[in-house]
Image (cartoon, rainbow, N blue to C red; front, side, top):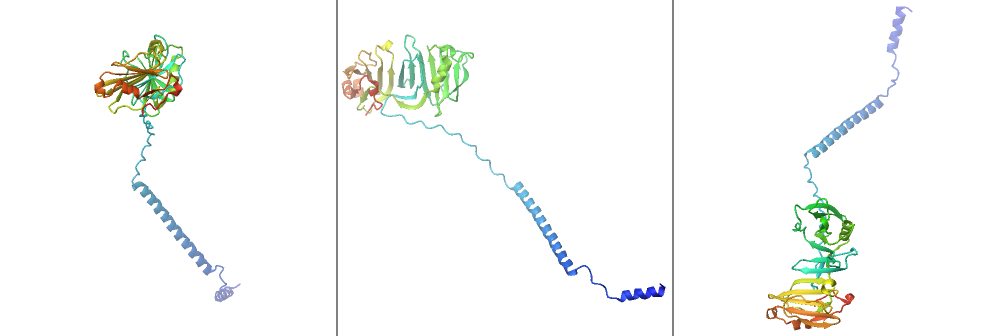
Length: 325
């Protein structure tokens, strides 16, 4: 092909109409627009996420820390039930299990302390004294040297022995065991003249089975009324037949305008405690005696008081916890 022929064909090709394009321009524009919007949306969302995260961070950094929740309060001790008012002898605790050496239980209330005594027999009768106080009492004064505390669990509670000898929790037989009660007070067993090979375990069992709360003690009399001036000084029972010559005795002592009034109730033959010349009456197998050291100050006579007393007999199942009124 000559140069002239080549030039002629190239000119014809240039003058010919162009073939239809393979790319759809409108479609390309639509796709491009969607992709641009997608990128813009992604950018906005991404920025929003960053801003949100920053905001959360800022809030967590600058928001004041909430105050710590208050510490949970421990449950308060249950309030002690009110003591009965129609019985002069109310115990703060009651024995459960007791060793076989114990033959009786005595109760005392009033100016010389509120106690429960588990007692045996003989000249040196075994004794287990139970007392209950609002707080742990002071160290016993009869302990020599520097008293030591030896931990002891009592019914799941942290109690302790008090002893003058750190190597002997039982303090050579004059033993003190203390533990907190369920109502927030303190109980103590003071034991002596009780000799047995398992003494420590026995006393822990005695302590573990004590129940607490006011308990009116059944008594062998009913008193219709007492003058308003009467105030209880002491009330106690005794179960020491070796000493008293009778199975039991009851003594109630009242102060009245400076006078001392003593009421004794027991089976016939018992000694009479108190001051003043006693006046006595025997009914239903029991004897009641009333002594007043200053009758004029008391404002009542012994015979008048005796007329207000009903004796319930020696059968203890018929005694009453509702003594006065």
